[in-house]
Amino acid sequence: MPLPDDEGLSKRMKKLRLRLEDLEEQFVRGSGAGGQKVNKTSSTVMLRHVPSGVEIRCQRERSQVMNRYWARVELCDRIESILNEAKLAAQNEREKVRRQNRPRPRGLQQRILKEKKNRGEVKKNRSRVKDD
Image (cartoon, rainbow, N blue to C red):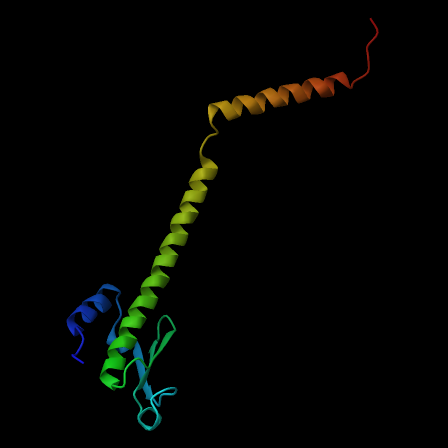
């Protein structure tokens, strides 16, 4: 299997402001299918981004080098999704405030005032009858 595009990954990490110094990397023994080879070699990569606390465990390939690459790609994906969710939540909050503060449509306002006037008439009719 050819080596992955390391330059594209480094550009992506730079765009997300992920530094190699912020990553903790461990190699552990894998599990699952693969038999003796998987059980004896430490090719599974556990990658942790310290500032955000995001942890990735990757055992996609039999090669340690490929697993390091795929773990970093997964880390970029996860951090991108976290950033996008935060951006979307902030946008939704702004939209909610905008909807709450905008004036009511003219037709709705007129209906409300008409209903209030009718309600006032009903309440006025409940009062005592005055003698003249």
